[in-house]
Image (cartoon, rainbow, N blue to C red; front, side):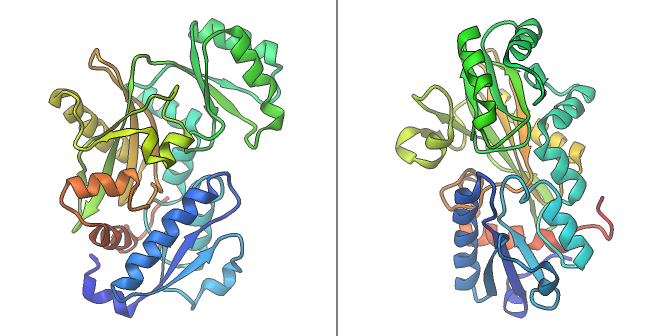
Length: 323
């Protein structure tokens, strides 16, 4: 059933945020913004840091959970499974889609099997020595590559390796990093970071205008994602219409491929040749008013408060059983 604004005052909404992953700061920004919007609209909402939740105490305390939890433990299916077990409705995707979206090697295998363009990649096993990893990456990918955690987001712990020395140095530091498993991807250069929001509005799944970003940094890194002065945004995108329309079509296809529900954000790397390769899907996209999802929603004529109502409604539009 679709949730109407008049229903908000009848709901006890738990905004789940925080956690202990490296993406905690972004999750706090998402949760606090969602909480402020819902409260201003008359909802009975409370902020619940997933670091401090007694899960069994949630039953009977909240009627619905709005997920603003990012990263490991927040959007990888674990919270979704706990809420399913408790019988508490929650926003967005279920366990399976959440897990698939978080684990990039499995996600990219699905893309390849469905003939969806994604940068060539190789998994870097935690047990590999730096020398073994360098040799394997060079044999598989050849030139410069992009390294990132196999399960993570926000461009945290990611970077470009342009030669063997940089690649070896990056891999030698794995033991000092939060994440254990990494992937190396083909570096698409020149390229522009783009993203497409998929959102259910009044029960109908739609794609939002394409958002593209330019930055003078080496890539669209964590700092650029959280500092407006380090990036130049275009939404709707200034890229050719044929390329942006293609990204919207592919974003919807990817959303459905993993079994996502209600909302997602699909990231691309767009090249001047017209290529638009899928990088990843975010099943719990950031909810900051200045974040990509809110920016794309505004470009589509959807205010931030309206966006929060649409996001909340996804908790009540799921099928009876979602894997």
